Image (cartoon, rainbow, N blue to C red; front, side, top):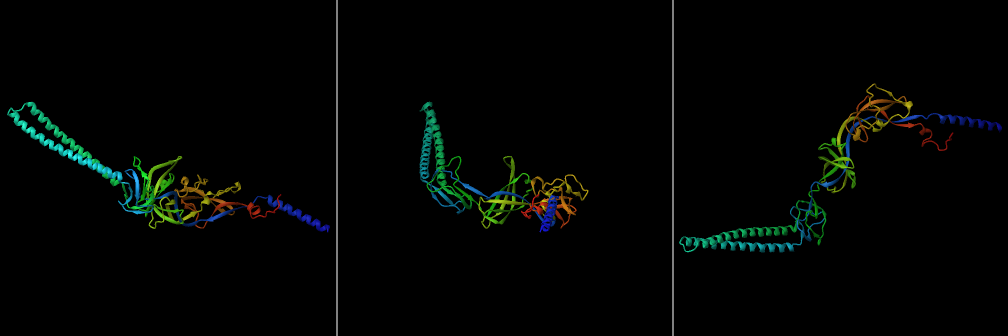
Length: 413
């Protein structure tokens, strides 16, 4: 029995020493790789904006009063010139009647002044004959001439009064006509800010009573594009977007306007890009938030690198890579993503490097990249070919010994 016990102790001692040296040794290093593929790369610029009608008209009122009737409501289709609301016309009718009376009175005064001119002319002509016969004095003749000139001036004043009263009458009739609010365009009422009985006041700032979208089958999105990406946006570029109401559906549009006016918010400069949208099925509504992706570049049948390959760099000094090529080394250690400041898809060729696994050791290979997106980067120039596997991640050997796959009951020394 004692013999078996001694053998067991020796076996345990040997196992302990072996385990100690096993876990003491430096962990093995392994690498994850990905294949270089050939296919299509589409570079996009992402932005957000809100949907709106191409033409939206805000309808106000030019006269003040109380809303007496409403002829339309939300979502009502209207035609140009169609009545949509009416202000109580009582005061305007009274004003028209008053102005009409003033106009008639002014016309009568004009006729009276014209009659006075005719009478003054007859007196003047008679006095002229009497003066030549020496029957009246020069003073009487001059008084008759003065009376004639005075009556002619009275006619001018009466004509001015007629014109003034005519203008007041026209204004009163115009105000009466404005008491009926009409639609200025064909479209759909998307907003109503009044109710029957509400008093509206016209002033220097005309109140908005209705908002009418002229044509909801044609809509647009005004998106804010960062200054780093605006140079890549061109007219007629294709755009796709999604809205929260239809998360599984991608809608299509195109760029129709690039505005030059900058918008500066907290030192961040953006520019407004307008994307036109066909809304024939009427699924989209004004105000919806759209996540827009503008296609700025597309290349077919090109080699594609995974972005992680450009970010990879060996961590251990002992794994310092050997140059596979004596090509230009300047800047090859920079691991910035392709595309520079503007992010993926900037479209500039950059000299970088990726790593191949040769006999268990990473070997640097210089590459030049082109356009990119979030999933792949164009390989413009390199010795690499389709099917080659590049390193995308370094995995420590500790994962085998003490990682998630290791037993939690292993001994610690």
